[in-house]
Image (cartoon, rainbow, N blue to C red; front, side):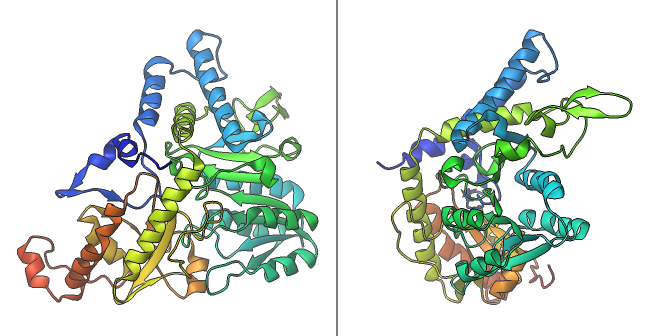
Length: 438
């Protein structure tokens, strides 16, 4: 059964927007996804009819706000197949969720000489907290490289695990540059066999593939709501209860304490001990609505549609002269449970800086991401300072991707000066100069 794409697109009001008369082709979903009416309506209804502070009152509005907030936690628990709702901690972002694990679990369990294994695929959010911990605690970081096709070097991972003293493997569930999905279950099994815990950065994975934390047996998993068709301002840290119960709070304040004296305090049990201050109630409501909306479609249909779309993008982009797709890109889909790449691909174009290219494409309503995508170590490994990223969602269509060759050719002509007079005559560019510093 295929996805009802036309009906899906109707649920996203922003997709009807025009930019300078051009239909919007939003292909920057790895940065953030657009929000369906169900999410916008749920948050609006909360603020209009239930707005109060959760866990801080006995009146009807406070109780309703608490029920809405905790109900959202239950929705996330079910979505991730977690054992207990107490294993779901709400944060403001995936970045904060990873920092919470590093600052709380890391400070308690990592000591000088202990090793944390990272991969060169990681987003800065899954790098910097561990560098900070290295500087603070004297731990060692080890880096798993990739081969020239973008696949992880399992020989390196195995070597690091068996060298001893590996306490944690912190790994992406899906690269935000290459779209590669490491075989998480195998990596987690090998890591546990070597005595290491595993944290999964699922920010890019969560909208493209089902997650079962019990089946994966990961110890921690983090993601953000805004990349799952939900609002900004909310993230999730899943942690096994056996670890959360022994982790100290990262922040102190109202709502996370059982008792306070002039000299000390006793924190509440998880998850409350990790959620100091007024929580993101409306954002949690929006996240739950996003999950409910997404759950009406089968993962098999989502994966099939997005694989076909990404393969189509690879074929289309490969036809453009002097364009290089980063990493080996298979030009045919594979079975839905064995994706070659998912969600995104990145490319470079000879003599055109990605920032310049995406600025010009944006004027035609085509939204792509330019830069190093908060993954500088990976770009250095690939030999590029920056790239242009195309990233898809279930509402994207082949027709949107088909606009790229002609638009890129127009951008090439403008930026190389071949048709600068013609471009100015049409009001597209006025004295545009190639940017050389970014």
